Image 1 (cartoon, rainbow, N blue to C red):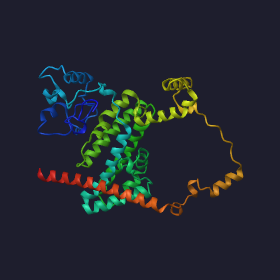
Image 2: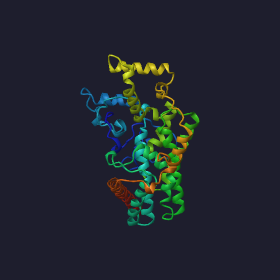
Image 3: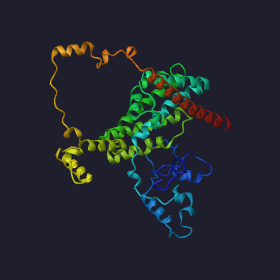
Image 4: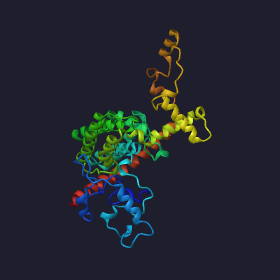
Amino acid sequence: MMHGHKGPSATTPCLNCLSTKSPSAANAALDSVVGTLHDVDTLRHSHPRLAAHLVRMVAAGAPAAEPGQQIADLSQMDHLSIFRPPLVTIDPRQIVPLPLHLLLGITLRLLRIAVELVISCLSGTDGKVFSYSLAETLRCAVRVSPAPYHGGVFFGRDCHTIAAASDVVCRTILGLVPERHHQANKRLWILWDRLGRTMSRAALVEASEVRQFRANALAFVQLMKRGFPWVSVSPKLHKVLHHAPDFLERFGSIGIYGEQAVESWNGFFNQNAAKYTAETEVGSCANLVRAMAVAREASGANLVRPTARKPAREVARRARKSGDKRKRENKTRGGEPQCVATVEKAIKEGRQWAEAVFKEGDRTVGTFLARVASQ
């Protein structure tokens, strides 16, 4: 909206490049020039958006713009899905592919692929039953649950947990779909786990890992598109394939510039502001930055050094080892007391999530089969 852009509903929905949403007869000429989001055979994109174009759109949206030169009078190739005067003109190369949103959206898409596989290989009824089973597997085996106040999806850390436990998720479709689909789904999760870890890490990434990230992104999107033909390349998948590797190569990290890193540093400042007081909040922040500079590294570990704890006596250690409920080996999952209302609420929310995933998956597969039948 800040760039006067319609977003995913626009003909060219990407803020970084000029690729159109999908091939169409109406935009065939434009597609042939700039390509589409479904072009997944190349690593680099040859038609990036330019800041100079945003500046021209600001001028075209000004009240003094000459007739015929206003945004509404320009062709699609001239305005490139910008319908209002941009409020800011940021170089598109500096737009951060937000790791949290990519993590949430693509993790949900991978979970939905499992439901769509069962629907396409068996039936819609089987797919609905499987979606409930998948929700229970995530709750009981992976120990994650969707958060209704978080849009009905999983938290970022839960997405990492699901990717790390992808074997459990992939085993849910074992025997229900052909082995080749099972192996393709398993490979997708492995690649996504690697991509998600690199994107979310708030640290500089070595050049070798950047090259591996680019290769994994290409393999991930190509496998998803070719192994599961009903999958449409969304703007998020397009970001992972084309723009996340470029941003990573240009700035050395994505997680450092993501909203989670900014929020974590905001929290760190709030916790330590009393130690670096000043007349204004900006001055207090400047004092904190100076302290980090003296520490030579912008790390909370250099500023907050925990007091070393004395080792416990051997007798106490043996007691904890034999019966301390904090230790994993002393926990009995089946025997742990649980609030019945909490369990029932988690089951209910899981079923609501399963119903939403099934409905979307059933619609996607049905649309794809209808399109194939009409060709």
